[in-house]
Image 1 (spheres, helix red, strand yellow):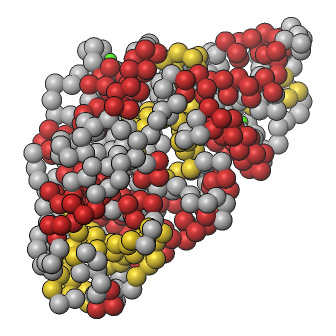
Image 2 (tube, protein in one colour; image 1 turned 135 degrees about the horizontal axis):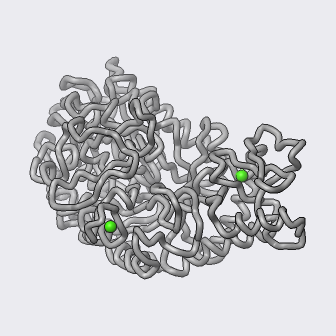
Image 3 (cartoon, rainbow, N blue to C red; image 1 turned 90 degrees about the vertical axis):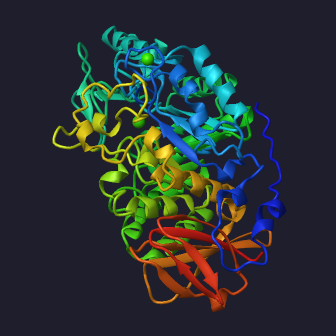
Length: 530
Ligand SMILES: [Ca+2]
Ligand SMILES: [Ca+2]
């Protein structure tokens, strides 16, 4: 079990610079921190390993490539200024699979050879832990690949009428003449049965009524935890029992209680792609991705495009409060985009600054926000006319000699990528990359934001300006967003205690004089009392 070292944040040294001043521009020096992350305040980064970094020249990203790039994510020194600063890493599936995306697993105990070896994964975990990064891997257990030996054994058993074979109960099936209510089925060749396959005929669904399947899927998780993995992202969590949220939630509560026996600090986040009311039920087991915040019509995009920020803050607080009814101190998992959605820069342009506002809204949230690889440099990619998810999982734009290539089937033209590369953005002080980096520093330096309770504030009549006070252990800070395209002056007389600009990031500047705050366009700021 990993021992977590939690260093106390030295607020005093951080904010000394800013005392007794009420108008100045802050630099990154004042945000230097000496704390490592706790579970609730991590900033996660989702990686499609096959598209990230290639170490052996075959064009496919691999674990060795990822290890080589870890310092880009976090070099372990929060004060070095050389890393993005994320403290959590989610790997899309890495287990043996016939597909490039690997959501259809053949062997849950082996890293796919195109990505490397189990020893490579162990090394990655070690290197992550050296840097204070929590490493979680995608665990798609609702279904397997139809090429899995389990499924082959299942089919053989049913063909032979051998119902005493353990694999005969591994998958969900029914008689040819009947059906599984509401679920998709396909004929099991050579038998009088049909098997459940809600996603694809090549993805048969495991039968979670079977104690053998429950034990098997638990053993997989335990195996990887013993190898150094800190937790999991559970794919298709609501499909465990397609017909019943209640049964799925109950399954996950049991599953998580077993994982916590192995590591009480195990961090798991699940995909329950549904409305907030359904998602929030699953918070009894683990953290869930908060889909309402995501995509072009989600809470974040609407507010970032100059929409009503006060409404957004209320949505955020309500969401948290609703999760609090299910679990104490919920850890939210907001995100803008992931591997199943079009990339954010397509609808939140870097050029208009909407991408800057969206990043500010995403990272000023409680819990564990998730950044999709390349989002921090405004990478683009959408299904487009080819209607393929491969276009959402393109090769990371390093701008150096990395040999990683787009996945098979991708049709998205490199000509559409207008926002630069990692190489070009690191050296550009005003780049989206440097904005993300600064926001993560701001987040880490103000624990009220990551772990505290939020209260909305009223800041005049302009709907593009909004914010909240975050409180933790009798300390508080005031966060204010301006998602509009112009600088706005706000009377802060009602919040006069917050007289120190702790930090800001975005396209504009921030100043405070005689309780009047001027906040630049597409900018977020944090104010403190001292
Ligand atoms: Ca490779
Ligand atoms: Ca299922």
